[in-house]
Image (cartoon, rainbow, N blue to C red):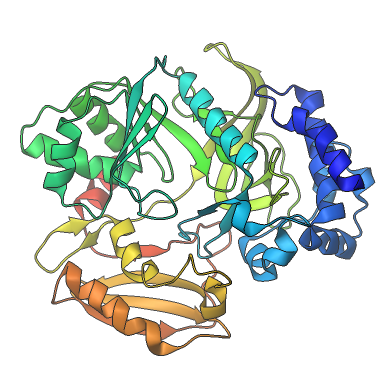
Length: 446
């Protein structure tokens, strides 16, 4: 068939590990043309916006393409957002955490998934020399998709997972029994582990590097990690929909080098129009390699500043960015005074949903939800109901909540909308109490 022929022609270029500006334009042109031919969601979106795919010849023409939101993409369903003829049972599936309000199911074929992994390892190797075999300790992940085992071996690579549901003593024990080359995780979960190690006067194994992602990395957190683990800390800007988007420059901590192997980032205003270089805007990305489930001008929910192509002292020449607003959530205080990461509180609600059930869609039940700690013993969940909403989910949520602490109370409040204020990022978990995390961030003037 014609579209299969075009895909074979384009396959070699979209999987290049280094793409120059002409090759990036080529990938943009290919994914737009492919999506219009083979993906119903984009065919309808382009037609509604009056976009002719053959007029999109590269990144400079992307401004004519409408911005894609998580909600619009997911509500269209797999028949609309997957390429024509794709068999979901033969694809690799990833689920985003949903911490921006709408969970996303990401589909890739095996080649695309392998490329995603290779480009992440390549981005890591920009900061540290990797020698095989090596061990990665992943701190604080959620048990989801295929990441359910505490130890996974992929050839000479071993991944040890310290799930956030593990008691801290077990996390420390597993860490001490490992010899990690790299430790990775969210800043909040790494910070909590580092505090426990310091308070117990435990000297952990020294990795070559710690890399963080999925949350804003604040200076007090960086300093604690560097002090406890005695190694450099680098921030990586990743997302499940694309993989690695940027990595922190070793010479300029406030700058990230864009990974143009995987995606093309734009900073846009509220209407989706690009803002000038150096001006803050909403970040949207076009995935350059995934044709199974294209993401074209996809709104990430973060804000940043793009600074254009630069020659850096670290040896990299290319576009750079500053992330100005990303996920930043306070810890939750239990009635006994313990403080837990916001991700654990998110799991209390999210774990009751059958995300892996074929045909099940979160937004049919809840359009979105937000968890708010109003008092030490009171958790309020604000919800925007979907068409198939029922109250049946809340007994299981209450059981999960009281498993954290028996004195915790739950109130559910239905609201018409949970959209954040213009220019602000949606907070899935909103902790209103005074915590050690919030105090240290505030004292640093952040």
